[in-house]
Length: 254
Length: 382
Image 1 (cartoon, chains in turn purple, brown):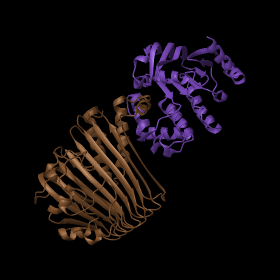
Image 2: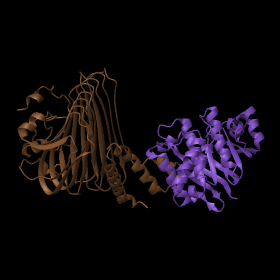
Image 3: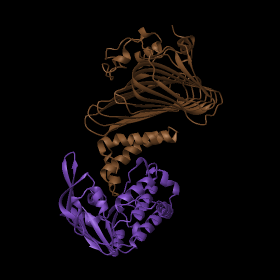
Image 4: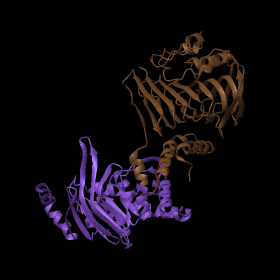
């Protein structure tokens, strides 16, 4: 069992008119075995939360802490955070020309495991993961994400999730831009990951649609840089009917 | 007096390129402000610009597959054959003092079963050289021209590609650190021929190559790839000129370089001229420079001169910068260390060019050379 603990996290970004605070004190605890959904309107800072936890250089942490068990992640470099067990499925996966997907996966697996995976079983594992996500095996030989469609990039994120099998996964709007079939396939991948029972999932989404496929244990409504309300799956159902308006108004009134 | 074959060519109107000529006096000693010389360290290449004969040669090693042959020809013969007369002082002196040229021929229709390889090795000489490669109609194969060791080497290289031929011409500048290499490579693409050139410049104190290409007839296709890795104190300059002088021709230029260390300097000049007659052509040129450390400078100047709008497409791009932070973040977010992420990105950057060489052992050798270069600033690969 392990726990991801976010305490009073404050994050700013540099803008033309000086630093701007995006996260204004986020508190959240995710235990392994749990699926948490973070839902919020555009611009609420939910993607910032994902990237700040992962250590993107664009975001400056000005206060608070993110702990994976006893390890303070904010003190670690990006790759050290990953090696500590964190994974971020990105909303816009980056294209890396000339680096084959297969080479990338093997390099990442080696870095995370501390030793190279066994050649024979590894190739089989990669092909099986591609199959499960509905990607042709030829994707392994292609440059990482280069020329992939939006949906293929998202599937490739989940291929990585399955193969690298981290302790905690943050999925940043993995559902956006997916058609209904891709959404189902991607969701199944996330569910397989969660079904191991000892993994934590933080699912960031704008829409309730993906929650038809992935059942969260907890739902957090994220507005204006902090969590505005928390509850069980019923909170998502509520949002489906009422939308975010109530929360946006409340935040504006503060 | 230029040869008749050259007189038939419409005068070159491109402002970036002087009129080709075999007359040394047509290419005066540069002062440094000239458009074609303003990026070049003239003092460093004095030996390539000074009109003094030398009968020294580079050590010559050739591998000629079935269908290929090699012999020396007189300067007069060479003048009648060339793809283009010399366009700068270095190459005109090379042609004037080389005492003739070496002619390497591939028979019409030949299908080479392995690379035709010429390895030129220097041991400190000052050398004027002229090579003419003549690829017969419908022939296919790979030509590998390798430069190693050290020399002050001025050269004129002509590559004549016959109708319908399919050829890969690879020139590798893998010199020792103190070598000087300047010259003019010119390619003439036959009707419906498919020509790919790959220019790899790794070693040498100064490497300055003008690479020009034009078409003998419609339908030809030209791809030009380049790779350079510039270290401290090194100057590597590639000046490309594609002359779309025939309709329905195609060209694609993609040069990539990395720079590291104090005083590392690269120059890439790309120019494409689309003549009035060149309807239905397409062209694209691209140059990318990856600046790995402080103290480097990359000049990159793409040009397009368009005299007809009746074309399929024309474009260019040029980028010079440090590592893409987003790429590094993505790789590192999967646990890959920063140093290894950088290596992956640089290897990837070059792998796309190296794989065009088409000779596996040379491709491996080049990737290994890139690894060694990377080890200079990034530590050895664990």
